[in-house]
Image (cartoon, rainbow, N blue to C red; front, top):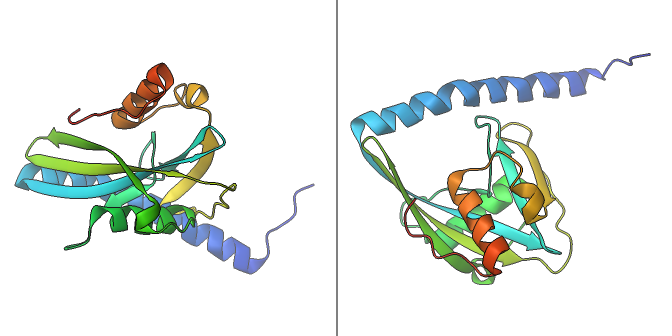
Length: 175
């Protein structure tokens, strides 16, 4: 027998769904706009490791998994961007000084040029995840071999394949 959600939970579920639909519609339009007018973006992402597993997130506007991260604010060092985005997307708080630079990922699509700095963080305790179910709809820790079975962003796949094959960080400069 199904039970009805309390009114505030129904309202929150509807609000979350509306955000997800908006992200799904606006994101491709925004990316097309950037490709057509030409733009350079700078971002940062974090590969969070705990107990030989890496944290991956899936955003509502993408079908692939990636590392938590996002765009840099004007004048913001990318290590701060990485820590801010990690907290916004997963609830994990990490100081910029606790992040280790891993590699730079550069990509282009049309007139859009992007550059992301990828950092690593090795958690000593299992991080408690808190996602918003609007932008980020899934988050979890995966063994690299299991993660490689998922639909991944290309730089995440390259990173995990390199770590799996060599046990070391990749030195990817361009995809």
